Image (cartoon, rainbow, N blue to C red; front, side):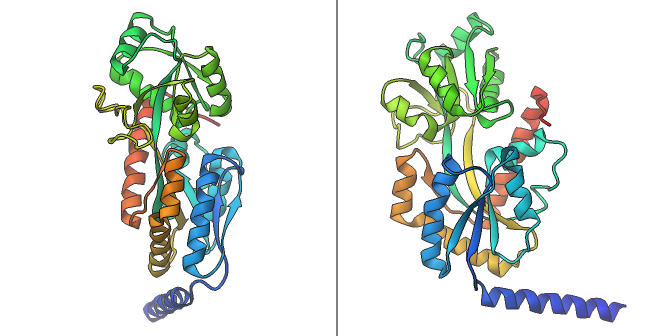
Length: 320
């Protein structure tokens, strides 16, 4: 029995080495677990194009939307661990979603192997221009004086925009009214129309309205200022260092993918994110193209998973 076990392990090692040495022999698939046209799709396509140029085979985007990203993630979790399938894991789906959905058929921490970060983007806190506040502290004071009278919109209950505002409310000890929407598009329209007073959302969603003077930027949720809005302070600079809210996109392969293949995919991702065209495009939409080691992505994922998990539990949000 022991000899058979050793023989099996040796065969597995030889097979993995062979896969890595011959990789890639066919197109590589990146599953975007949302429909075309959204921010994840929009930033993954130029990444795939740049990766194709370096890896020698087409890198294709496969949109598999549904169930807030869970259908696409499940597809890759159950795909062969050979490097030909990856999924874009984002903060909302890979760090928040597992705490909201109790019946997932996959485990984001166990069923995926981190490859590399490729995009980070701040959450941007904005208010309607007619709201009589210029700073986050003034906003907090107004909300404290008028509990539950300020309405904030989000892309849905349990979304990053919703929970980012929950972070602020807990840090500032204020109460506001949450109005969930089916996406930030309609929420942004109502915010500009005055039905809402404020929102916290990904910068690409709000940047155009801020630059057009239709919304007022109050703070970014990252630890450093955004080059797109250099005059807008970070939440830490406004006196709320615990309100760190940003989104991130990373590539994940199925667990068990050989390390040599992960290393090759990582090298191509880092090369693509270092390309000036990719960096310029990301900056133009309010994001930053940034690569990482697999270990760095794994550390970011675990830290964000734990942070948002604690908040979801504290707020008491669950989804079916």
